[in-house]
Image (cartoon, rainbow, N blue to C red):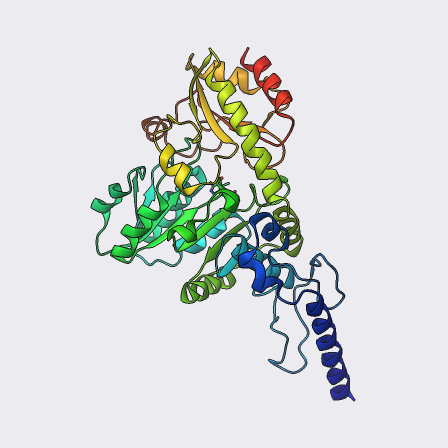
Length: 412
Ligand SMILES: *Cc1c(COP(=O)(O)O)cnc(C)c1O
């Protein structure tokens, strides 16, 4: 009887799957020929096989019933696999033009997994102007385990050459950087890494796949703080990795399930929803970003404006070559380079909310030296241009006139 039941179950499921795949015969075969916006909407998602639900359900479960020991549908325990996560991981891969995606419970958990590919004695070359939390993870956690990190400016890719030795295994970069919007040439770095058999990992959080695809430029791994633009609504913490190499995927999947920093199904659902509007949001982030960058540049009280869309930006040519637009992230200093003047400005905006994070629909203002980058020692910070009056903006998708009016009253 039990045998018969399971036989019927399988048959019915096959029927349902074949009927739905009948409506969408080869969506995922088509994915590589789709234009970007179409891809962001359809990436990973197929009608749910059991009901036809157009949106992937939240499979809120910790385990899966097996018919006999070891006999299951590919799902055993939710730290290892969850159907909502499976769909999202497929979506991550598709939006980054990669073969495999892996989701993590935060951006730093994704970074942590990459460094766990290494062993004591290995060396990493990392960009010197990076997200403060990445620097903290490298210097405060992994150095203790005998991994050595060298920090260097990568605006000229050749800068990494003199740091390469037999122990070097990984090059870690971020472009554009946080918060100084430096840009490095991913293809040039990838060429050097290939020459020396090093892994190149690019933190693509600021650019998003809408503006830049590091794997297409030769990188081995793309990392995102999904918390930011991919989620896009300031309501979830998550990270991801995307790669092409099958062995690398197996190693990173092993780390993901062994170390356990996996996101829950609800968070996966929120990100699946977020990705569907990435191109529409990014288009507006870019338009608003451009207008605000020019507004700030013309303001008599503003010192330097860091935004990679300016023609006089030191890496403008590379940015134009490897990115499809310049985004809504920027930083600026005040002519009166004074911490109190900066702090007064930071607490007088009304629309720009004073908060860490970035990439959501609402505009945020942030003070890197006391907030996101407080974990970097002051001398190190100043040396890299992160002065006390530096203010970072994550320009949201509100009406730009309202945003400019808000900055106008705050800067005074
Ligand atoms: C936020 C951020 C991270 C860390 O991601 P979490 O999701 O906060 O763990 C890494 N890199 C960049 C560029 C970020 O902005």
